[in-house]
Length: 403
Ligand code: GLU
Image (cartoon, rainbow, N blue to C red; front, side):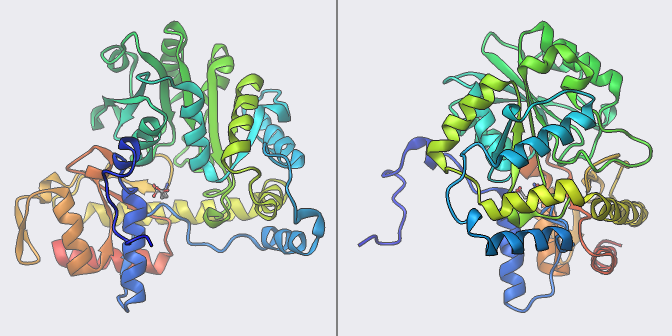
């Protein structure tokens, strides 16, 4: 009988080296606290609070009742959904895409894992602009590669430049990770900045892996652009990662996709056929309904995020020691909290952003993700994908503790 204890010597070094996702760990903790009766307010996981649009739910309910969807389907995804993703992405980018360029995955996270497995041989390096989302280095390590952080700063709005990239290029560099709008910083690249970065990748013969999951979320006139649409020479070396989770409030349905050159997607489909077979047909039918009929619901949710962003920025201005530039995308604020450190907060001296996050959870019952999770100590990530009244109450608690 298994003892229930994990003997770390018994599992592979590769698996033992992986730690739990900090964002999901915090989300788990929030849910445990709530189950135990605490009224904790969470600015932690980037998860829209809305119910999935009814039109999507109804399509899924119909699919459940139809035996046609009760059995295996092609590993690469339902042909209708692959077609819809190709049309949707092609329309967005002004490109002609075919369904064979699309692989449907179990959430965008699986597209992330596939992308690095497809590209990396042992020891290959991926340039990862930092701060970065928690799962990227782990997905790269699991694929046998090495994540090479490329530091960015507030001075460039956390956007990487060719000069920054030059400093970290080696003969082993295989790919560049490109995330705009960014998690955790919310920054959005301008077109001319993308041209510079994209041409740099072309000049060095690199692949680009583009996380586009926040493509619906830009504000203040900022525009989303896809890197291979801006730099067409990248089209044969770009993998685009996206899904329905954020735009249509469908985090639990687990439908993402990877878009890329046909031969690469075919290799990805081979991989997937052994890893998980097809993604749940019910969820795929739901994702199809989201793409075909969910636009107005997505637009309403986006309007709510814009409103919450403005409210959050006003609150942030009033928090002593926080410096919060206005990010143009995603649904995160990423204030520097360095001015609040070294002070007595809630009866203890708080020296780091990790300690600050712990104190906020213990004493104010608000959950935030410390910058340490994103390789950015001194910062804290606030997701504003929560209900307006929770947002107001959470920020009031923050101001009471720090004000
Ligand atoms: N991507 C979201 C976040 O960063 C959801 C949690 C996760 O998958 O990491 O909070």
